[in-house]
Image 1 (spheres, rainbow, N blue to C red):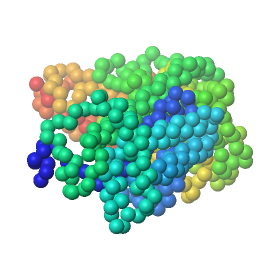
Image 2: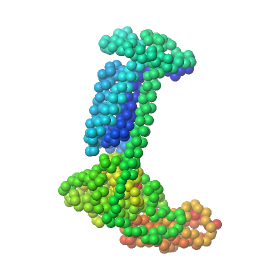
Image 3: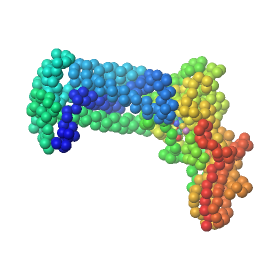
Length: 575
Ligand SMILES: Nc1nc2c(c(=O)[nH]1)N[C@H]1C(S)=C(S)[C@@H](COP(=O)(O)O)O[C@H]1N2
Ligand SMILES: [Mo]
């Protein structure tokens, strides 16, 4: 083929349409990038990308969403977003092709995008004067780029000539228009910039070798093509940089807003920790988990960035009266501070998806008492800004336990990764049915009316934490010396409390471990047991008993649908 002869990849001119498609995609990418950057800089309520994405997801027909859930399971959101990007790209390519024929078509398409962007961001609860700016700036950038690319459309004159010649030339008025522009200001620009243009290299094919298409502008088709590609790919690159830069700016704004938060002191402070909450054995997870070490579970692709000023909580649904709270209004309420251990349903036996923190927040009970839920409203659906939902039994939120809308974690405002500015924490329930981060809505509903995020993915609708225990030291597979060995770890049965922990060696009798102190039944509990290790290979197992007297089951079960069961078992070798 010709490629061998010239050593260049594509001497065949790609179909004229391809340039249009590239132009459309590049202009759309640039619009989104500029929009993102402007949104971040002005602190508008939301980037066009997020706003349009949100509206698109909201308007995706339910069967399509359900199909996505069954086929892509937890990746449904990724799949939906990929779908949106694909649809957008196809539409963008179409607009680009039209633009290369008729500038007005393209500008109309861009304007349509802009209007959709403006309207989407206007639907946001916290819309301000700044809301149209990102979409308008993005649309202007796209329009500018489309016009620029159109002027630099490679071989446009050649194509037009071909169209002129072709018997089925569709629109007689089109070709002269294109020709006219092609030889107009466009040509002047090219002439001015000619010295800068890259010199054609290594046997560049003459355009006339191109499938016998007569070429009018024989003098400079190649630099033209290069300029077009540089502009188009450059715009896509710039868009990527703008998106990344916008996201960074945004993260910095939120970090600064978080630093500026002054947490109120609790009207009901946490009791000081008993001196002996630690079993005093190294290798055991510390009683309080540092924020930086706290496990994380997010379905969101990127951490949601919420500014406290944009935040509000709406409590609605089956209630006597609705309630809307701003961040300042929430902070002005009486706060309680408690140590509460949070655990993930996906934690395997012996796993580390569990952590304990000192949370500061407003009791959910107080808020529910104010809105007065209807009789049958047995489920509180908590919703995150990212669309995530959890369903919590209304009864569990009103039975007097310390269910909190938390704003503080271990003396700091909530870290962004852990739900800044506000999340829910409920003692005794797995995180997926209670601990919604970046909380924005509580809807009184019923279990028969609504299934939350993970429930739609086959997890149980109700999920109290199961009694569990873990050996932290020695670690499994460890080589030990004969003689005394400290065996220690943690056990948990939140809101019931741990009353006993036992250890056994090689199916021998269960031995009582020593329990460390706890501030309440809502945290995990450290334990230790002194073992006189004898030579050989040994198997160590642990089990806990909760305060209702129920012994942790040894029946092994995977986390799905409502939490793993079984005894944590480790093997060690003693010399
Ligand atoms: N918005 C949102 N909230 C969420 C989740 C999520 O994916 N998105 N995951 C839940 C799950 S499954 C758990 S176990 C806890 C984990 O909280 P952490 O990431 O702060 O440890 O958050 C819960 N809240
Ligand atoms: Mo979880």
